[in-house]
Image 1 (tube, rainbow over the protein chains, first blue to last red):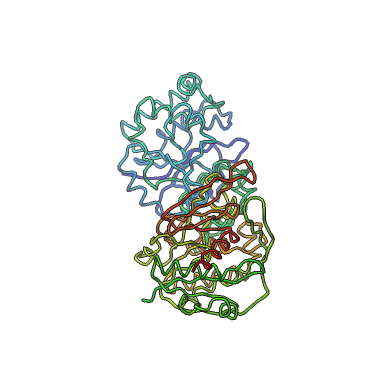
Image 2: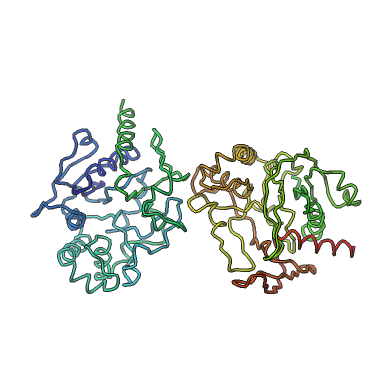
Length: 282
Length: 285
């Protein structure tokens, strides 16, 4: 059984491919044996290609007009495009900060697995539904697709076929399943939750009682702050050492860090990772 | 392994902390049956005011009298308060000063009313502290007791601490001393934005660092719950294990709700009302 991490990136006004390169470097730094593939139709800078096992074109691309929601609508293809039997799917705006090999062992127990508890930068479990009113109001399972896993097989295939159907008819499904706080766009979190509800499988594809796998979710209004700002980077400092220890506001980060804000992936951070890996290879 | 209670008491112009420590020691003897050592900067005051101090205290440890202090508002109920000096800078020396292998470090304004603290000595963890506490008023804003500031690290109460003499705890107390000596730096780095040094904050920062700047297991949880009343409430009476407080009333400035509270130790932050009660008690002795 082959295993690997897969990301899908479609550049728009933001450079998601560069984010994916940063994420890939973070995986190589902490999990050198891990295979990482990128699904994209955009150009990957030559210097970063070596961090990927495979770079794969997005299949069945009819329209190259890119935007955030378009990128989201392509994500059901990951199931078909992944080169691995077992796949962890990550958002591109994430950093892997620790060895996650033990997580694979846990995930083997599932055909599909979604994270349903996420953390603040202080390691507290997020309880706020500030960004998830649609989930609460419509009684949808609280799934985060930022980190999810699937094993190729009937179960995952059925799930992804439904994801494709919902994505392609999202207004219809959202109208049926998300009448309260109706989203403006098709999002994969909501789509996956709807599919889990249709298939009545949420208990089989997540486990809210386990501590890991999870990720630190840096959306500013869920950090347990009394006075949140529009950008979390305006409230707490970011410190990345040359040996890649990431500290956010006095808290050393571990696990998977979902930085959310695009400008976090600055040239300086990319450069620090690149230099670290170059030195490690010497 | 020797066991005992350590209490710091350094008077200011209007609050007699030594009196509180004397009262605390008597209640420790009654409920915990442990020796109590006092750390103070004025032995002469004790000698002249508490003739039986040698019986009440196991040891009296004197520190140098210094004029360094921070200013703090001391309320006496919701309508009255004074800005007074507060000498809290010797607490980081607890590790060096304690004569015991296992020490229960208590604020002088703790009023013992049960035996819960004895459980500390049966715990495996070498360092225990409360991370949460329970206000008897139950309506006030508690956010300052969750994190030391909105974006900063978890808050711990330095009010009641248990520690054993271990190399790790020595590092911890040395670290607190270092934080105190470099308070402006830590105040800034930990986004406190307060000029006044506070032991709760220094302990919280030190615990966070000892945990490797993450959630960690350096600090175990003190047994039971820490109950408190603030200095906007008034202690009226204590009869054995039974307390009578007037607790500030929500949205009614200057009005109070009488509360009777039994069989639990309470941190009484209104020093004036505590001392008034102690005066009454000592007069009856």
